[in-house]
View 1 (cartoon, helix red, strand yellow):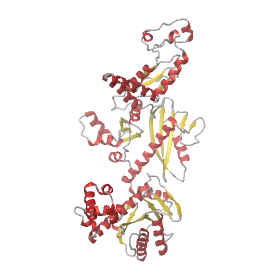
View 2 (cartoon, one colour):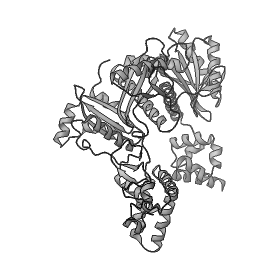
View 3 (cartoon, rainbow, N blue to C red):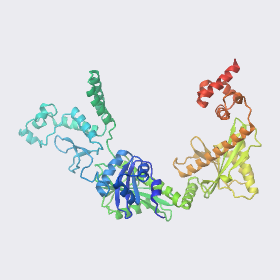
View 4 (cartoon, rainbow, N blue to C red):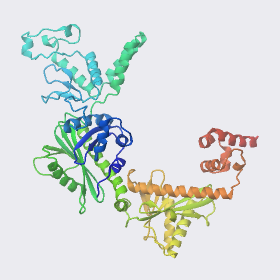
Length: 599
């Protein structure tokens, strides 16, 4: 398939948070950026007139756009930092230096210190973060300092040195900020209990601490100490917005490769995330064409071997959604919950987005391939004997039995064929009988097609549940077409799809392309039928009592009859009930009209 132009690459971008990467024609990375909405942010580079010379040069050089989808804006910020540090793109200046986002460290030592650091040292210490805001870290550390007295000195507080009286308490002890473990004035067990409470705070479990802050804020407010109260209020707001951890950087997960797959009839889409010391440094999605009927397991196993070789991965562990066999010496982990599961979910999300984008791209650049794939997918999803290249959908329209009509819309290759749409006046049914009306129009439609030797559709859809489906089926039976045409019903409320002789409906995935085509058919049939009904009603100039009310037009009459089903019910409705349908002004006119009649 030919390479997508920049215009198409931008069109198919998702609207999710993530990181975008610009490459030149030689596939050299030029720039890494973050976005709350990838499509909107990337589009802005190509729609604005840039005053900055550097940006103008960058835009001229862009040849390819790649991206990684993440869950939150914070994750995008952290991932951007990781990728800039890894690849040092030419047009990124801000984050190329050695600075990185801060962490909170609980040092591995006796009477552990708790402090801010920007360097992760693999010495067994605990690290929490990273944090996108240094202010958040300082607020957390201030909170910890207020609640617990911890030492800040760098002494080696071994029991032997304390017993020998090597150290003396410092000013922090006299200020009440430290309990003097250096002189043996604080029990180690108590200190460890405090550290456990601190771990809960930095993980985000600080409900008790927040309640304490709120109490202090109220005390300051009662004493008219508003500046102090405001200071504490700001701390509360920051803590409430605090995000404890990110799936993008996690020090507990070391060097691992993460793989996931999603597939359709023809292709498998495999995403590869590479983590180095807990940070995502690469995301790559590839598509593999199915030669036979390979399973997801077989495709993923082949892709894992190929991608690890291509990117020279030396990781000894991989995370995957299900068990795979990829040779000896590699630890296979199938996470079920926690941070490891989040990483696999993130990989799967990127595979899904890649698949959607490819569909969009194919639809624009290779419509024949798109139609072929869509038809194959519909055949599989709807359990059809053949591809539904020709689909017809029926819908009835009437208001309390007045002017009953029906509509038939026709789709060819998944798209409306408007010249083939047909309208029906109901001839043999008296009053509002949707089932009998459906039977009549289906019979008339296919009797005519068979008499004229016109091609029959592969799929017929009736708008409604089991009742309408049975009526349509009766019509096909009468014509001897059962088995020659597949007929299904779609119920509006839960989008249930009914099949003849099966009481249990089929539920398609809400994001399924097959369901979207069916919904489009149903909505188009409804629109076409309602339009025809209104035209007919307008021509017939239906003379109901409602038409006599000053200030009430045809649209209002239709709306009232649709909701109340009869003029009698409208005359008995309360003003509030009428208002909910047609608004206060028109409801007052209708209500007062019937009130005056009663008087």
